[in-house]
Length: 586
Ligand SMILES: *[C@@H]1O[C@H](CO)[C@@H](O)[C@H](O)[C@H]1NC(C)=O
Ligand SMILES: *[C@@H]1O[C@H](CO)[C@@H](O)[C@H](O)[C@H]1NC(C)=O
Ligand SMILES: *[C@@H]1O[C@H](CO)[C@@H](O)[C@H](O)[C@H]1NC(C)=O
Ligand SMILES: CC(=O)N[C@H]1CO[C@H](CO)[C@@H](O)[C@@H]1O
Ligand SMILES: [Cu+2]
Image (cartoon, rainbow, N blue to C red; front, side, top):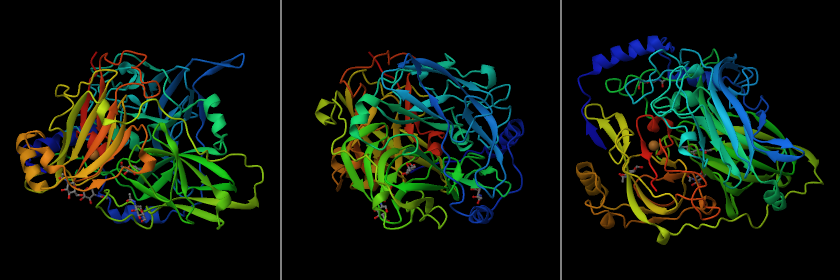
């Protein structure tokens, strides 16, 4: 950790945030204690709300029974949402095709492989944010007020103009637009293979608050002809999306976010990680799903800001993992515990016909921060409950197939055109020891792009964690696969050298990256959008800047402006400022 002096601008910053708080209109009321938040969460009876099924929006139209490209308009609205039977409805920001139908999370968009979709994302949000934010981290600050937003389709393979670049933000009615804004309508080619993606806000410095407020939703790409023969559970009742997110609530039902920073002298509001006391699935705290004695497919998306989930079922039923992020595994992998990082997705089958009990709780054992933080509480250790109906089901024709669709491309280091070192740093206030900011390679988003891969090539990224935390690394556009993680020996010496030189080669990384090798679990060996980077390890990641389905380059110009980004997907880290440009070249 690199100590930095908290400059003597503290007073000025506090004035600035006070002024911004007034302008932004977020709640700054009396301080709330952790105890109060814990009490509110503990007062909520678990497993009383039914698991919501989010509205489905088709990303294609049917003409004489044939799917055709279509154009959707999806807005962001201020909306009331009830997170639990015993909590009053509260204000959230939600996606929907209209204000009346907006939900938290937003509608599930169903696209078809090979059928392009256009979406016009509209901002109908009010002038003031409902949650606190911090003008001292690099942030979109419109001159005339409003809540800046921009939508990124996580896991999507699409042109740069449709990527939701952090500086392509816009306020209500496109009244004000960020410096890289170019179009109100995004084009999603859906040329990539079937899988689960999700869309969410990506505005500079506001992602953590905008997602916390509700700006996220699932996007599923299907290919009925290719997927039906697999025999996986299908249909809306048996193929369900589970969007996991932890939140803190006040007694009035509102979402709580701390408006005092961990080191207010450096950043008046910013906190290194948001952890809530309650766990919501599809927008309800600790919901219940009644299931038949048969197989179900669950597409689990971790939409928490910072919480990892180590999921298991209380009655010992395994998860048959068939995919991770937007890709199938080559063959199913059965696990009893599933570690899901922020923004990571797993596609699993659970066979409730094997349940020896009438109930199965989905529980969580991941410490927070992961991996060395506190154990989850009796509250955050629970996620939801499945109530298994007693009657046997005789007509479940679904199965877990022995083999799943494969990709042309495989994760081989030999194919790499280039090897890069990507180093994750956390900086501390010299006086207080509190984290002040996090950077990748010691650089910020505003600094010129250094990761400039050639479109159509493969690279190897050696990702080095010099911090205490596990960081989920996410690249836009590219697909990636960790092939190994090797412990770093002589860590202190290496860290000191890196803090001085910020150059892995000159710091003799080859001499340090010789520790124990950690194998990549079988259920993560596929083309991913997020890889977990363990502390104290150098993780070797094969990165493909091409279509893994065909081995060919993209069917669009991926080298256009404004380019892409890559970042840590702990939203609080991304906002301050573990995010860098990713600019493809010809
Ligand atoms: C809010 O942040 C401040 C500063 O880090 C901390 O002292 C306080 O305990 C936090 N409040 C809650 C409810 O976590
Ligand atoms: C998940 O929890 C189980 C049971 O507590 C534990 O054995 C396993 O090591 C955990 N997995 C990870 C990756 O932390
Ligand atoms: C949620 O994200 C955190 C942070 O990356 C991660 O550790 C956790 O495993 C994720 N949980 C799920 C269910 O994806
Ligand atoms: C390379 C490095 O500094 N790794 C650190 C990552 O985080 C762990 C804590 O979990 C430290 O022990 C390592 O020193
Ligand atoms: Cu991070």
